Length: 217
Image (cartoon, rainbow, N blue to C red):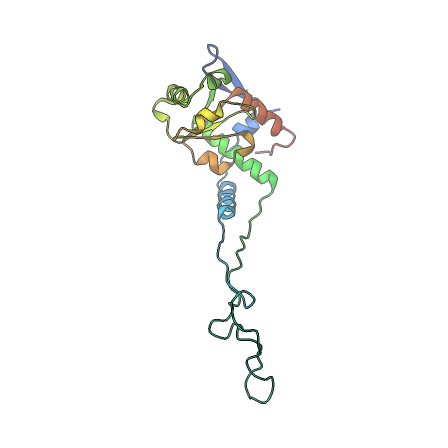
């Protein structure tokens, strides 16, 4: 197993550090993978709400407009056919949102590449679980974030443990986005200036993204 990296823990014991796996936080940057993930992610967020009315949706008489033979004209049924004014729309939008696909291993590796970039740029911070949970009100949460981030307290992504009750206090902060390990993705990580984890979150990541399933660099 690759040697683990170390991160200092804010709000914990003196000189406390936490180990993070190199195969999650030490991968090289991959332009093509991240570009592909962002394209797939944004495309799947779009929703096509347009819906054209076909001949079965528009209002109109259902009688045959003229007899089938003997007129010299093309045969027709009712006046709701697409060739007539006020008729249904042929080949119009169908309120469908085509989805782009990306396999699980590529999604996971893109997440690790984003984490590695933030790690290299020193934008990943670890706060002790006790320090995170000591905030009982939104005001307390704001104080904790200000002490941790200082001047870098803009566009923060806070990843909380699954069972944490503290996330409610941080959700109301305008500069903080709160999520869990299962909600993290590469686009979300790269769209924030700073990422805040806890030792419990890192342990959840080690369990959820086990070394056997982790992609190679």
